[in-house]
Length: 320
Image (tube, rainbow, N blue to C red):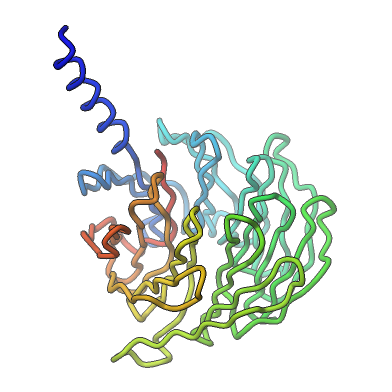
């Protein structure tokens, strides 16, 4: 094979490799999981996974999907290649959202009805501890440095700072009404928490547990009560954060340095949750009422495609 042909083959292989990724979407009202090829822009298939699937997380090695099937009161483990169930984890009643630590050996589950966070040892399939938190815990995250677990309680309007070593609450931060989701910056120095009923985002310093900035969202032509921030993600380069605004049908683009809202992206109806592509060139949104996902090109900050996936898409995870 001559050098020119070999070069062409390598380019094709590298391009195919770079584009190979799969988007997994939980379908709350179909009791199913949608499998999407975002590069081709196609729904590959759907598979049944249990009753009322919502929260979804992929393992660090991309081999296992953890899915909260809320009406089954368990977390299901799904092989990402075969899409077969390979195990279950006890979760407490009505699991909805949960977080996996960076090492992939601990799962932290929000038990909304019991006002608890369940700490799970994945390898042993064993509950390590149940941490009493505020009323209706939902959003939960683990800091990239594995030091903190932060649980957001919707009715108490607090972020609870749980020491990941001791599984004890060491501090609470009062935030705006009905916090729904929380995530950390890549350096673990700040937590970003959305407040659904206040149309706001609180940025909290992890060292002091104090709010350093509140961002209020306003969308021209959209009533204030329709702007309900839920899912939030921050890119690994710490340039932008993205907030799903629920019934406003928008995603807010926030400059991570200045905290200015740079843009509102029009997506599908009742946008819930967000996930990046592995190269962070794209953002995927689940749109519960329009029954689709939106694909956002992050270089141009434009929505390039909407793709129907099934009834009431809720959670989203991406496999390279």
